[in-house]
Length: 473
Image 1 (cartoon, one colour):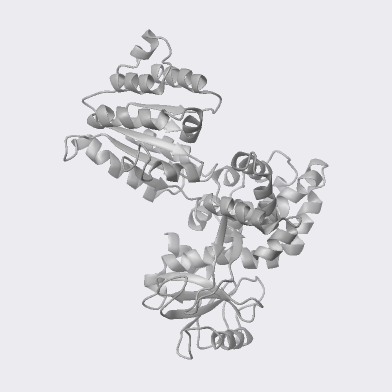
Image 2 (tube, helix red, strand yellow):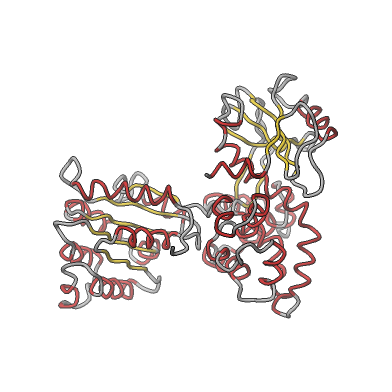
């Protein structure tokens, strides 16, 4: 055992891409490419390393450093020369290539022609930013040479927006690579990795965001509060430093976008309140910042789900870890550095129940969407929420045939995520009253309760944390 958890789907996809590389493909061009994207520290490189270890093929793994084009060309040449490729010595016999066209052409000469191999270019967005001609060089060498060889080209990047653009119409590498998105570890993976019961695994997922770097420092079987007490004593813990590093990498110059992100992280959800909390920014500046944040998948913009159109857009931090970090850890770092992590822990304890109750809703919606065919009414193709400007009513869970404007509402549900209180008759009465105000629902619309501590109300289907965890099995 090497401690590698989860990623069965992603490893299977990579293995599937190797099949035509091994067999020669139907067109006589066995070469394949895959563009892998995902948040920083989500485990993209570790996934590929595990894949390479399992396949045991000749390969080269190069990671760009983002310094300069010449530095990365020299690093690439050195990596290939030191690799196990059969003709890698050719790189040692020549001076460092001065262009990516020359470097990739030399790489083609170092690859085997009679056995599969893998070439990995990690942090590819750095290469694109350093050299506007990199994409064109890659496309030319791939079309002329690499696609004719039994090689899998793996292109990895954390700049999600840029990696998405690389495979869009008009870009040199358009339709030449399969896209793969690497999500954080899911709650089921967290439960397995930390040996936690289902409810505690959801707590750990909300705090860690499923980031392997944080989970690796979480002692197996430790409760949320035991872990936080330890992590908040160390200013260098992954829980503290990962958030700042992510924001510095994502927003090196966009100060206003980061300010707006902070306002959302502190709990503001509407356009007006976000702008006010961000220091009274001009509406145009708030709009530009929200466009940046949503395009980079840092923030999700959501509309109420019902059969009636609505303009009541609400915003939330899309990444669970960043949501927790912006709410508690970022503001608390000065206290931790003064040795008063206990104050930060007290602040988390004070707000934890209310913060968790809202933070867990997107995770529960994803779980329900994954379980739709098994536990939800027929025709449920999307799961969202419903609200009005005054939050009267506000319904946690709505199932429908499509979004954001449904033709049919398939269910309405409530989340009660408390340790001490079950979903009871009063909660059911409130949900029934809110259903009556939901466009597209009537007295026959099924009801659902998702509860952390059981259900005592009669006449409603309920799901527990254990039920939800099955969504990722």
